[in-house]
Image (cartoon, rainbow, N blue to C red):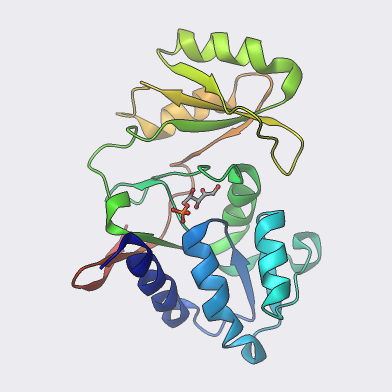
Length: 219
Ligand code: 5RP
């Protein structure tokens, strides 16, 4: 089974965990693209979706799913999104696709967060994947110096601008033994919009595509 087959299987399995929610929070990425395609098959049963990126918005519209404004919907019942890494506490690294800030907003606005991924994303300790940090452009050098002071090695994601008009620093070599503490420390640097650690708001459920089917992991 390819990684993409596993992503598709995890994405389809998420349909069984929507619990009749009428408005679905939708993340970003190749795994979520499979989820959006699957959601299209049940579009008559839902009112619409709140999207975490311009890319997902375009795909939702193509699938015939109305895209709703989070300010109008209020709290969502469920949010479905992928991850770049997940541990067994369901703390995540996200932002490989650069949509981390809107993803964190929609995750925070949701009662349940269902994470979908192939089994290469499950790790013992977070941090092999470079941590994405969204930064206001004028603060790029300041934030990079602060991240070096935390032990990290930041690199500017060349030629990339987020949906919010900001830049991404991808940071290697950080110590993730206290993921929630690290999330707080990085988010407190002036100029940082948010980092891609989801430890304060981890997932509630991880659907992991494997060679032997979809494994369900709860926090
Ligand atoms: C985008 C994300 C994605 O969820 C993450 O990069 C995983 O992507 P994929 O499903 O393509 O492996 O955080 O900002």
